[in-house]
Length: 122
Image (tube, rainbow, N blue to C red; front, side, top):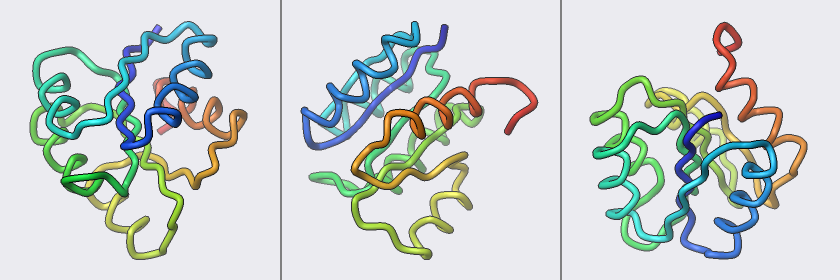
């Protein structure tokens, strides 16, 4: 299956997403530090990144930009507990394929991940 990078400043959120997606057979690598996630994405083949927008040092939008510079083909889902139309538009403009609102809905997450990882559905 796919290699998925998860970045959220809350470890419980990372672990929740990891559990959900590992049950679907994916390899999930979780991070709570922006630099570690960017470094991993630059050195490894990652199919999908799931990025929280509100982080500690950088915004998820800035992480999205950095990851897309290194791996333009990577699929991205942005997460936020504070949705705004402007943030959603900015993320999509920068190359995110999907946008999810917290709290995370298991079925919605699985559906969006499957949609982005299946060729021809993006």
